[in-house]
Length: 246
Image (cartoon, rainbow, N blue to C red; front, side, top):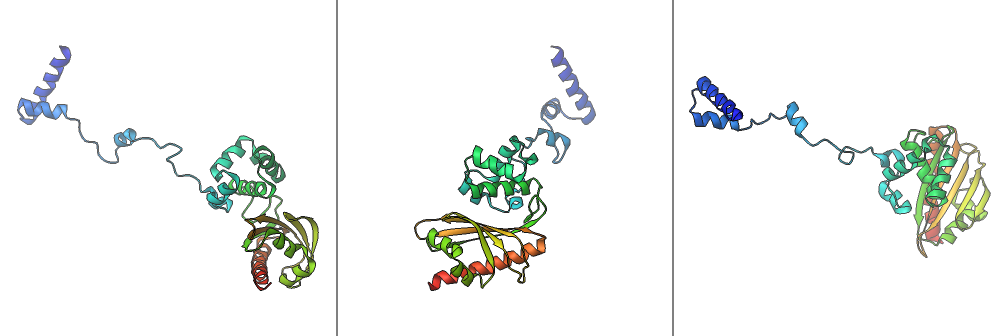
């Protein structure tokens, strides 16, 4: 009863102020006013953004590899790798420790465990693009060829063949695991300078297709790394021509 009297009092007060009839005054009081766009009330009434709807960090751009590529090879995109490695405190680990964690805990093979570790370190700001954790730089390159993986491996392992497509550049094989991987010492004094180690991985993509991915490491600065990246791009072009002519 008290609430009803209070309501009628409000209606009569409006009638006196505006000259409206009782019905019109009552309708105005019972109709909720529209909120102005951009008002604090409107903002409070809007759904609050969740982690899923907020703009995500572009992990793929920071890592230097697309989500599709890393997911195809490891089963997870970059955001899941970041969450998983953060859970294990990987930001405080060395590169070797991160790669070992990815390899043993998540059963990712050697080359891709290294790739995940490097991508994570770039995302966390532990190294710049092309830079290693110890401050040196590296040049990376990959290419797919229409030849069996054994033929691709042999083109790197055979010294005579290697000199042909490397245009006489002097390198020395340190270790080799046919037909999966190889490490080379860069011993040439040519335009790019002496020094560095070239880590090479080979992957079969069927009976007559394979891929090579290399990282020329222990380079002193970004300028040298850029020169070697261009150099390896040209050498892989020549290797492609070599296979075409063979």
